[in-house]
Length: 75
Image (cartoon, rainbow, N blue to C red; front, side):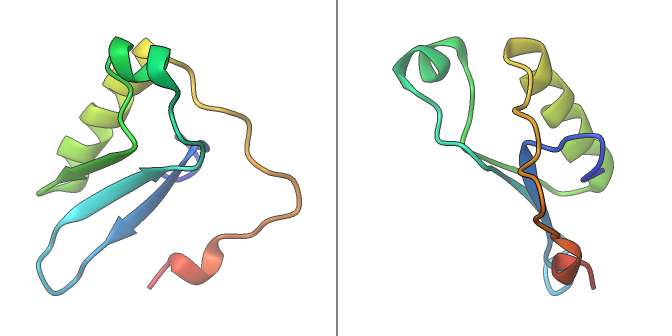
């Protein structure tokens, strides 16, 4: 899912089972008015994927930052 949505940091809380996505760039006022969110939460990976896909329709995700590896976030 992280590769499909490079503008988001994806987290899974194994204790609660909740999934979260945090946008790498803070949305500006226009983006917020359009419905762009900074943080998205869902109770399953499938629901989070759907919510992220809806965000991509509003505003495409920014390009990933070069040279940064987020593999330490995987459990």
